[in-house]
Length: 100
Ligand code: SF4
Ligand code: SF4
Image (cartoon, rainbow, N blue to C red; front, side, top):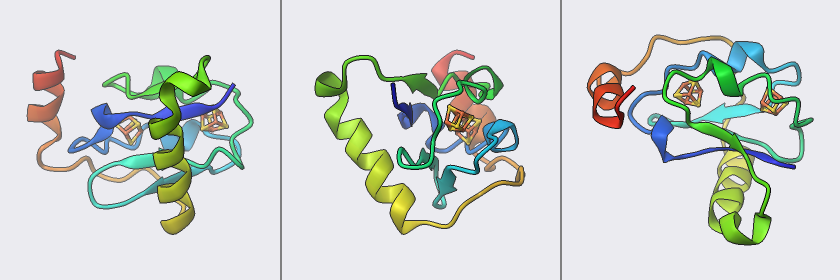
């Protein structure tokens, strides 16, 4: 089933995930990342890499249509990110706010 990045990523952008992806399906804007569902092979390797649990597998697509469409649309409009970057300056506070 498809994998998606959720809003937990916003203002973190730790990017630990991207170096675990074997097919380079992460894309990013200035605030967060997105998974391209047309490239993702659903291996799950990125899930444990994210420090704020922002990635999950979608088992009920009808229940998460908005999130699936957001990941697809944004990933198609943004460049691939395959090398880890420095987290955003807001990342530590956002992580604490999320309880991780
Ligand atoms: S590791 Fe998590 S927070 Fe960082 S870019 Fe990936 S999904 Fe976003
Ligand atoms: S599930 Fe696998 S292929 Fe899909 S984004 Fe995560 S690491 Fe990449």
